[in-house]
Amino acid sequence: MNTKEPYESSPGGYELVIKRVFDAPRELVFAAWTQPQHLRNWSAAPSWVTITEKHGEVRVGEMFNVTMRTPEGKDLHLQGKYLEVTAPVRLVFTHAWLNEAGEPKNHTLVTIELAEGGKKTELTLRQTGLPSAESRDGHNHGWNGALDNLEAYLASC
Image 1 (cartoon, rainbow, N blue to C red):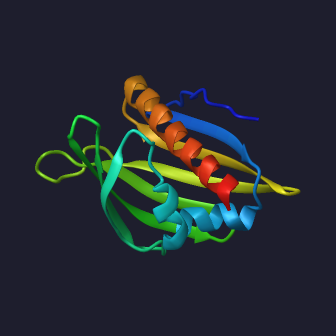
Image 2 (tube, helix red, strand yellow):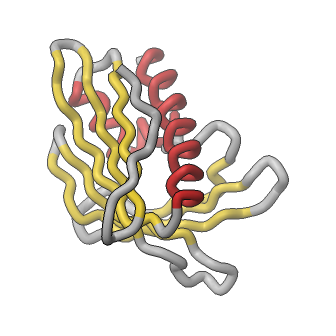
C-alpha cells in the first residue's frame, strides 16, 4: 500500500501524511534512517538533488544540518533537531528550511512511525505545521522521492 496524497490539517497549518510499505524488516528500515553507514547510501533526499553537506548525529537533542544542491545548482539548506529516537518504531525531528541569512523560515515537525508486518514494514511519515498547501505539496513530492530512494536501497540490502 502506497498512499501519496497529502491531507490538510486544521489550526496548526497544513499536514502531510505518507504511508509506504517496504519489503524489509522494521529494524533495517529504522537503521536506514538513523545509522550513517545506511544514510550515506540513500541520503534521505530525492534523487533529483545532491547532498553536499550533512552534519549531526541521530540522538535526542542533537541538531542536524543538510545542504541539498538542485540540478540547476541552487543550494537549499535545512536544519532540524531530533526530539525522539525510539528504536525501531519512531523517529521525531523538527525540520526547517533556512533563508539566505541562514535563519529558519518555518519550523515543522516530522514523525516517522514504523509498524511491523511480517517481513515487511509499514512506514507512516507525518509532517505538521506546513504553512501552505503549496508547501505541503512540495514536501509531498520531495519526501516521496526520498522514499523511492529508500525503497531501492532496501531492495539492495
